[in-house]
Length: 290
Image (cartoon, rainbow, N blue to C red; front, side, top):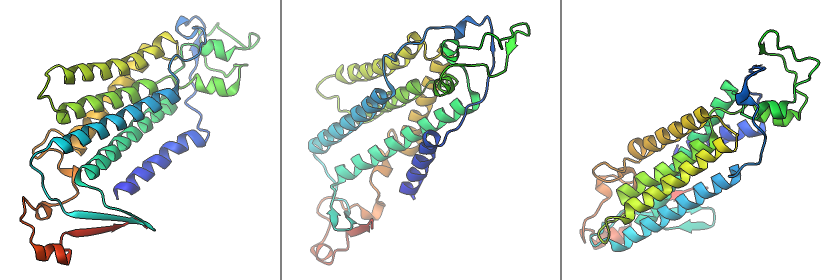
C-alpha cells in the first residue's frame, strides 16, 4: 500500500505539469509598483534546486546510515528478507533496508510538499513581481479609471503570462525548506557526536543556510514576493516535521520503529536463533515484486 500511495501522489503531481491547468485569474491596479519589476533570469533554476535537494539528501542519508551500521557494536540479527522482482533477487541487510525506507519516506514528503505548492499556485493565482513586464498590457484596452483592471489585456507570450500568475507560494522555498529541514532533523537523530560537539551543528547550519539562500534568491530575482517565500518556507518546514516526527518517528523510543518492517517476534537477540530454525528457514521472508 505504501508504494501505491507514492505512485498516486506521483501521478497527481505529474498531472499538474502535463495537463494545462490555468491558475485563478487575478486583476491588478495600474499604479501597483510591486508588479512592475524587471524580468530577469533565475539565479537558482528549478532543476538545480530539485537536483541538489535530492542528491544531497540521498548522499547524506546513505553515508550516515553506513557509518552507523559499521560503528554499532551490538547488533540484532533481524528477520531475513528476500526481495524478488522477476529474475532479480535482492537480499538487503538491515541497514540497507533502513536506508531504503528513509529514502522512500523522504521522497514521499517531497511529493507532498510539491503537491501542496502546486495546489496553492493554481488556486491563488497571485501575480509575480514582474507580471506587468511580461504581460505588456494593450494600451488601447487599458482602462485605469476604475482603478482595478480585471480584463485580460496582456499582449505578451501566453505561456509566460500564465507562469507570471503562479507566484504563491514559492516552490523553491517550500522544497528547499523541506529537504534541508528534513536533513537537519535526520542528522540530529542519527549523526554520532562522540568525537566532536561542533561538527553536527556546523553541518546543520550549513544545510539551513543553503536552503535559506535558495529561497531568498527568489526575492532579489523578482520572481516572488516576500510573502510567497515566507509561506513556502513554512510549508516545507511543516511537512519535514510531519514526516520525521509522525511518519518516521526519528526521536521516539525505540528509534524509528518503522525503519525495520518487522514485529517483536522477528527480532532474535544474540545467538538465540537455533540451528533448526536456520535450516527450516523459519526466519526467512520472501517478498515478490512481480
